[in-house]
Length: 238
Image (cartoon, rainbow, N blue to C red; front, side, top):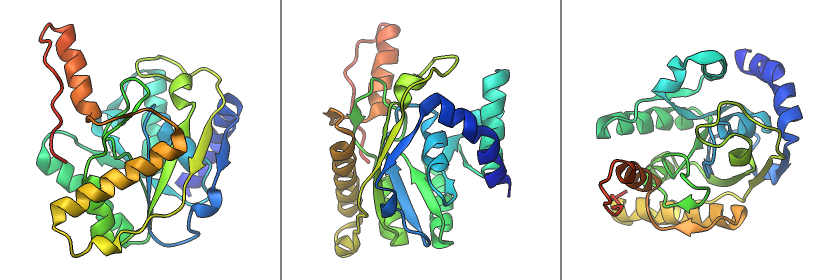
């Protein structure tokens, strides 16, 4: 009930701001579990994708979003709570694994789970290497992965912008991807294969330039450059 109410309250404003268009909606299963694997350009990705899909979608959201301050921050926190988004603590491997296990429980319960394989928002609008957590979820749940391309959200609300601006939003949903054939592979290799294939599918939908680095490493490098470190980014293992 809260989920539907939140869409009724905030939906009209989102439609006016973004005039959203969705292509490939028929690729979303009407029931049963599925992983919606999307590129990640803006915090509002997690608002527009659920808005345009009939079924409820759960996304992981950083814990600090739930305690955000300021008018826009409080509105965003209220939306996250009302739509039962998964609170995620990104500090440390244990926290990341706990998030994956919570997501696995949702999938086993037949839910739609929205996932950003890049792990964080793109620092510059390009598409970055996927983390192997997407492989963990797909292989352990048996749920299909459905690639998604969000377009226009970064222009509407780029990182650091205080308020969104009207921009046309388009969502492209690709065909379901199955990975049962990887069941006999070594787990680490299978997870990496899933992540790479999913990112390739997202890139085909979005048309973004692909960068074979983790977005978080690039962000760390940029932060280091601001502080004078000048170190090259290092790609951590998935």
